[in-house]
Figure 1 (tube, rainbow, N blue to C red):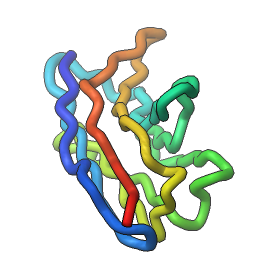
Figure 2: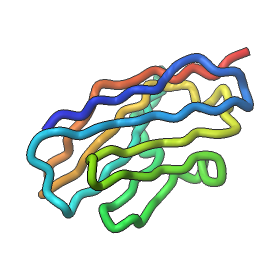
Figure 3: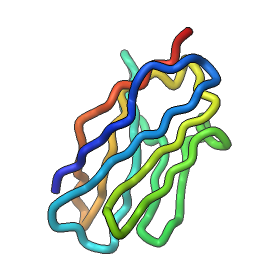
Figure 4: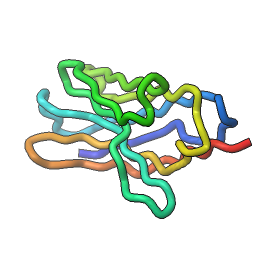
Length: 114
């Protein structure tokens, strides 16, 4: 299983970005896709996750600002990030959890700065 993420970049506070992550390989239907982030000096944390049936979960710090969604036909997960804050600056990693195994994509940098 390989995960390819894209969509990071530099944005001003209050701006928006959309991250995408496509999974390839042998993907079983029952899985959870999600986004984590790792800021300098901090541990990697869960940002948002979505199960195959559509159930979502979010970190408290992003609720109301970020929206996770997925395209099951194309094994792709998206993270729409609105009202970005400097504290959202981090490397964002997509993940796929399937049959007890976590797969990770390479990170994409998101920098929120004026």
